[in-house]
Image 1 (cartoon, rainbow, N blue to C red):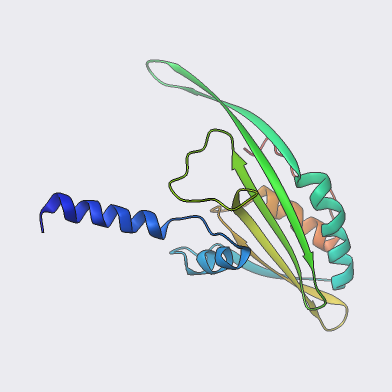
Image 2 (tube, helix red, strand yellow):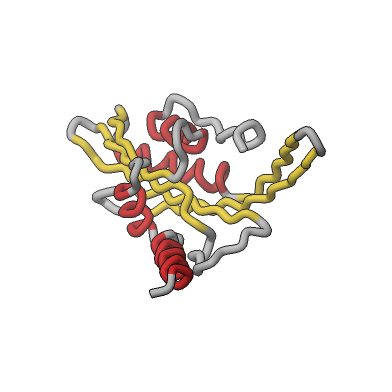
Length: 172
């Protein structure tokens, strides 16, 4: 096989492996199987129905909409100003055994090699499960490295200690 063909096939295989998750379950599996897994767990001192109510109230209020941010980069040769417009879409799924919060997003002008699910690519999935003693267990799957301002807000909602919306303006 010629080297150019081998490289092309390797690149195509890599693109196929990087296609966006089409469901929350696919996203969970992909985040868990990542080289640096982007998931975690905490236990909160609130019953599942309180966590569900907080997600149902705060997700549409805080995460359903469009955010615009402008960045400025200065190099030796020029100043580059870019404006990004991202649309977020939350979905809350309530069942007796768990509550799910899915956050999807789409940035205006993005070009995707493979299909993206309706609502945009998955950005964050948080699952809450009941635990004995009126407590809940949260497990999340994220695409960001390090601390995530969206996840911090959602943890605040789950614990009931901070019901503020995430600060999109300072965390692009």
